[in-house]
Image (cartoon, rainbow, N blue to C red; front, side, top):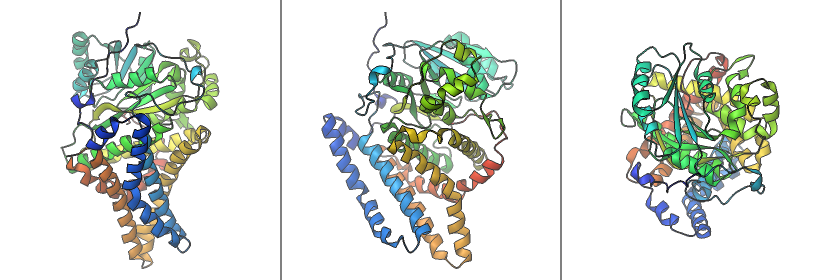
Length: 484
């Protein structure tokens, strides 16, 4: 007989306490809390609305320049408004927005068994901290499976020692398979009701996994949830500080906004938690994924998330394609219109690149994953509703337009004597970065790193946007790597 989960520990024990505003509104009744949040968010975003109203009449005269700026500003306002006025942590409260056919989603056991998986290759410097943090999880019904993909730097010896000390399962592969295939090999042995994943350079809060599982238990419609990630090596360089603030916004704002509609499009690798019946049948499709006529080797979090988001429309076809796989023949789970959420209180920290070279390689991997996934998730995302579609396709259009706008504003305009256009463009980029920085400051009182967020916006606009064409041109190149 299963025993109910004990109360979730406070996140204050493992991370910064929430801001004063959050603590104040959290004490209110549900309807009052959402009403107060909505008013406060509108008040804080009012200056941006005034900027929008001031510039809108100029649109007919300069549709490209003004139109792009207004679109980006409108999207930023909408995302912040949704994230701060409507998001609730599903591990803390029952969500207000739930499907009408809730009874069609089978509930999980009160304390579902969790298989926690990690694939690793040549990570001798950080693997012990990662595995120990996994083993320190305060979830009571847990199996830990670590797959070593033919490490040659001493990682395998460390895992052998930890296997005895921590009672974990270590699978030593005798042939290098790549991260996706290594994880799939581990999933062949995983028998948990819930399958959780992390990356080898991550450290988890003791209650992070428990919170994610609690969200799935309390909300049968959730097929997967993402945790909340920050930089572990935040104080190493200016570069890591900027990335830490950027990570906070990508999770606290972007994922929170998507989570309101149950349509988080990337359950990120640092802490990705799936119901078995929502993802198990699609591991062979993930491992055998092909794009532009060649195997797509990156273990993309976006693609695995896409199988959960879109299985109602593409699941039957994918399972038919891999009908002989044991992942399909063992048990054919029904295709459901699962929702995907985000658990803000499930904290995990990851080592971010400290220098320019590794950072660029990471960004190229991410761009390749974005390109590949757009051709998959983009085919069905419109079916998930108006607001999730706007968030998704709006982001896709912004990413695609970014390199064109950079050329238009930073190269073509100065050549035509329009230096003011370049200054205006950079001012807009800094304004957007400052908005995200202030959002960080609101959530993290006393943390002065918010000032680095405009730097990340400038880097994204002036450099990272140019990586999209290069990533497309080199998309067939693939290496074993962590992908977050």
